[in-house]
Length: 278
Image (cartoon, rainbow, N blue to C red; front, top):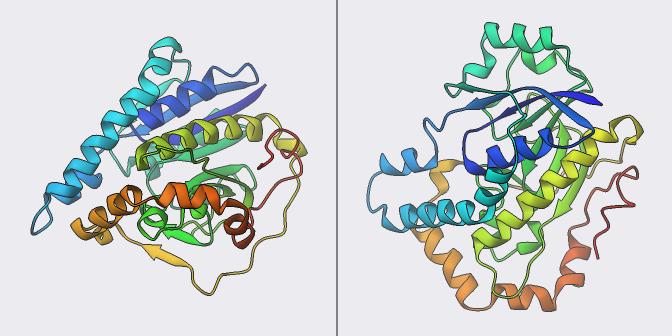
């Protein structure tokens, strides 16, 4: 039985993640620290200059898609994750650092929380795992599964499991998965399917952690992309939905093998028997 602490957010996808892990027979969640949505993307858009209509509609549609994807599972899964609500950024307080250390977890798992700072950052060397929604080192920063779709590159939509460090999405990679695409996908349906798969893989990473092998790290790509939240513009939303309207997913499905060969995943031998990319 692996004893873990989860550091996460307070949106439905985060609740689905922590409840699902806590329901696993091989995992005991000692505590889940859930940071509120203060200064989230919707709040930032509402304070931005100029038109906000398309960005707001995209975020409203995303929230509706999350309810459809996760709400039934959340309602049917008892909450064994011992959640504690926090103001965003409080996870780095002395109080919570001391609490987490005192819990003596086998692993600390981060998904959707604030940037972790010292002393918490270095308190669990080799036992602090972060999941980054995006394929590092290619896409880093904010919206790392949004921008590949804006740029017409669905092959870069995925999740990276890594040891946390002081950089932004720069830790040692443990394993990666790529998003599945199906005809008729929307940006949200593709993303929500990925989060469900990511949660399944994280469960296996936790349970199998002692048997995981170090993996060769990818070289820094010449064309890596780093995005900030203020890069999220009305124009980017227009491009995103035009890409889907004009056949991005259909073309991707026809070109899957050639596109995948250009963006190889980091695969951990301790997981490959159950997580092969077809």
